[in-house]
Image (cartoon, rainbow, N blue to C red; front, side, top):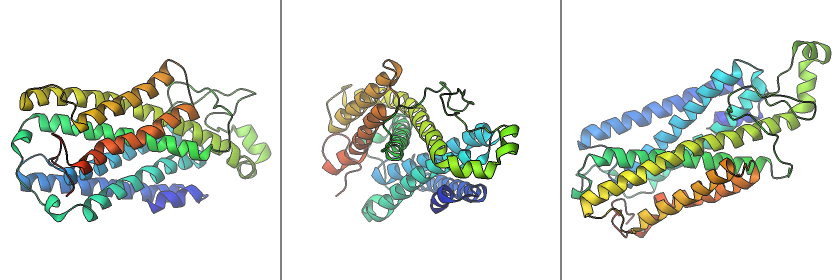
Length: 318
């Protein structure tokens, strides 16, 4: 986490990003091994209570960060100066890595010791639907949380700029077009400009404006794409949960607090995607909706468990 923050303010980002990437890979592997050992010890898939769910969420967050970095490495750094590409990769890591760390820390230091111990599954969870439903739901939470955090970061770095973002191509990971009235999407300097003006002097004068604009556009687009993945996962998770509820409790929908907040979460991100796909919104307006969705997701995931009421009370905090 610290290496990502250092890379944001450092001129030479390649070494810091390499160290940060190695640390996130190590964290991912450690959490994965921990989940496997817990699975072996308990004899069931480790998603039976809030503690295990939080650990799985932290692991999912690291997976998303690794995917983002691999995508950036393949499509950005191999094509352009790694100055802007490195900053862009560092921004996502500086946002997602602390989230994974805080999630793990909350699960380890705040939850009761009894909840952290392995235990037998309650009868309602002794089903093959456990793996599909809970896994997909937590993966959807991880994707939605990451997308929302990137939207919040976008709002922060553009808080003094009310101008709309320049239109970009539908695929974030391709080189954008440039025009006399537009800043180039990827800040590519041709050899003539590099030789006549000098890259170092140009970077010093334009990095604050061009770099922030490029990072803001990438954060907006990346947030959109991650939320576009999290929403169908959430949809599948809700549908699979309805089928499982019918098998376990004899009803597809009972307006349980968890079900109600899951539906509310679905509606918020349905509105977000509707405004982007149908209305063509970009920039601050959809980012505000996603920021509101960030609160809703955490209430759905953690807040409902604090109530200790309803059919989804297995992870209740006592």
